[in-house]
Amino acid sequence: MPATKRVLVTGAGGFIGHHLVKRLKAEGCWVRGVDIKLPEYETSPADEFDVLDLRKYDNCLQTTRGGIDQVYNLAADMGGIGYITASLADISRNNILINTHMLEASRLNGVQRFLFSSSACVYAGYKQKSADVTPLREEDAYPADPEPGYGWEKLFAEELCRYYWHDYRFETRIVRFHNVYGPLGTYEGGKEKAPAAISRKVALSRDGGDIQVWGDGEQTRSFMYIDDCVEGLVRLMASDYSEPLNLVNDRLISINELVNLITKLANKRLVKRHDTSKPQGVRGRNSDNTRLAAVLGWEPSISLEVGLEITYKWIEDELRKAGRVPLKVSAYSAD
Ligand code: NAD
Image 1 (cartoon, rainbow, N blue to C red):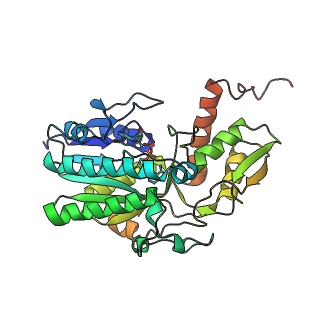
Image 2 (image 1 turned 90 degrees about the vertical axis):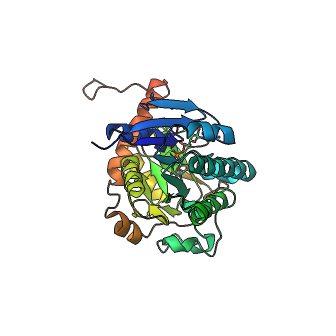
Image 3 (image 1 turned 90 degrees about the horizontal axis):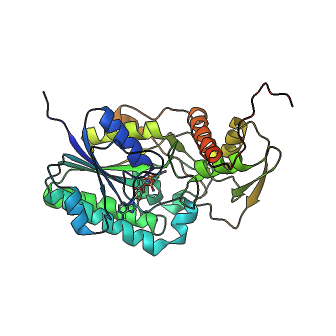
């Protein structure tokens, strides 16, 4: 019988990390989670959970102890477009420290494979100026013109993974997420991303009222439901591919269309109020999934309609539990 795989997930107190721990446990792995905080909405099923600040090198050495086979490095200081454009120095410094220390500690402690979670924010801004954007291939990150702060540190960490192979033959995998959404993700406080923010706003709006939309809403993006994300991560880790790989569903949709979709799911009619003083990021961004399909023999397939329905209901329920949206009225109650 093969020995149980020992896996470390950093950022296991966060959205993707927590879902990944659940998946790895279900597959029979021994899992250690680590984060600066515990998961917010559920208890982690990890065999061990270290609460540590991974900006500190000694903590990275400590959490990679004891014969870890694989590391999924998901810990990062990150958030939606408002958050990542507001604090360039802090985000860059925090994430450079986490990534450099985690790579080195993993190598010294004999980890066999290390997956780094990069972002579509590494892609060159000059290739994303139109809402009707040409889908981005992995090589479109160069010549470099990434998102200030968050995009630059992700691009550099990708390079660092390459250098670790060059100098030490240390095995790395690099995933470029675009927008991941689903239940158990942050939905308010400034770090939430568009699907969660819009779901919260829709849930809190009265039928016939307004909803504030950042920018003119014509900016476009593509999205991926969390179950597809976790599937892609596990497949990439198992693959022999060490170059950066896009991971997202390649259906392009504008933010206005996303608002329409969520409003319809909520069975409400809302008037959009566009606030063009808010940051909206690049004008258009989509993924060319040719390489993803070739490398993994698979592509994300859960539709936005299905994924958003689950996500919206979860956020609405959370707000209901907090007494911020009215309790459900029975469909049969007299009115
Ligand atoms: P998240 O914010 O929910 O999770 C990140 C976790 O990292 C958080 O729980 C946070 O507490 C932890 N963390 C931050 N600083 C830390 C520190 N100093 N020490 C220990 N832990 C620390 O974000 P997520 O959506 O789960 O993202 C996971 C990874 O995927 C990140 O690297 C992120 O940059 C990347 N990514 C996510 C998306 C997306 O749409 N969610 C898109 C592109 C890239």
